Every structure is written in C-alpha cells, then in structure tokens.
Image (cartoon, rainbow, N blue to C red):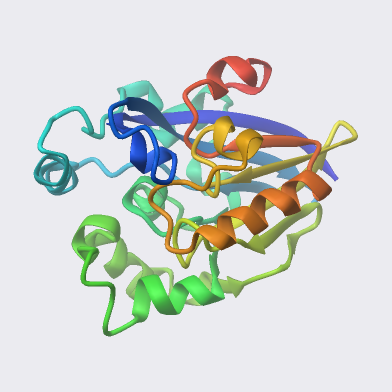
Length: 257
C-alpha cells in the first residue's frame, strides 16, 4: 500500500525547558527538539505529512524569547531543510504532492503549505474549528504565530476547495489518521503500513521517553488524551516515531532524505 517512506528533518527548536517535554518534571533541565515532515508514496499518489517552517520566524522567536526568558528555544532551519529542497533531492516538486496532512496546526507544520498548489489538504475536523476558525481562540495562543497570515489567506482564498476535514479514517489508501488531541485540538496520529510494519507518528510524544515511560508531554491540552494515545500506539503500532525527537535522525537514519 505504501511503497516509499521518507523522514525529512525540516528544522530545529533549539532547547526547551524540561517541563515542556515531561509533564511536571525536569524543571532544571533543557531538551533539544527537532521538526520533521514525512513523505509517503501510495497508490493514490504522494502524501506529505506537514510542510515545515515559514521563512519568517521573527514573530515566533520573539514570542519564545519572552516566554522562556532565553534564546535557547529559538526556531531555526537550514536551507537544505526547506521542504521544497528536500523534495528536490528526491527528484520531486511540490506540484507532484497529491495529499498534505497537517497535524497539528502550527507554524512548524503549516509554514510552507502555500507551495503545494495541487494537493488536497487534510485537517482534523475537531482541530479545524478549535485551532483555525474558532472566533474565540485560546487566550494563551497568538494566532499570527501558529497560523501565519499568509497561510490563512492561502487557505481561505486559493486552497479552499481542496480542504478536507477528517478524523478517524483512512484518508488515502494505506494511510490512516486518528484524532489524538493531547498536544493540540488539531493533533492527529498518522498510521501507515510499510515493509510489513505498522508505523505511527504522533505529537502526543515529543520524545521517545514520553511513550516508553508513559509520561505525558508538558505542553498538553489534556494529559489523559496523551495517555490514551500511548495505549493506542502500544496496541496498534509496531514502530513509533515521536514527532519532535532529535534522535529520530539516528533511530530512523535509513529513512532520512
């Protein structure tokens, strides 16, 4: 069903306070985080999970500096980590991507969505209301940070007829999504079968330690949803890919672009 799987590193989050990664723990530690996209080739065309960071990170990094009181949390990416350049190394262009799955709705997942002019775009139905069109978003989140204005314009003007709202279903042949919550209302676990193994990628686990030690992430909108996600992954997934683990580049090196 899935004939190609590639893991693409698209940027870094620098270091974050330990309690952001492990709920109510490690207040005196800092952990590195990284950002990734996933490319799959299916019978229904190429599927991309997340599109990487926007070019302009000034608003995000200003927010992080004020929040953390440090530059240690700074978002960054290298030129070769831009999703269009990673695809080019595979002899692909954004126009050859047929499906884009966004999870969660954040600048580091949606930042280069405007490059994908022909793809159907899949969002969590729950997350679409809560994180995109809700007229009363969380007072703790700045929509201009996590959903940049140029991407909002692209969604509502140019890409409107290609938006698909999904929840717990197969979105294309061989690729399933399951609403997970935990991190954000727009968070979905993505599951696919490749080389006779069931792979799952989820932001319910920032690092493998969240999953293996059953410790919810610190930035969780519902820690019980995190625990439910870990239980689901233990039942349903042969290979778990934590969404932001820098060790993914070592653990899954054979799939890296």
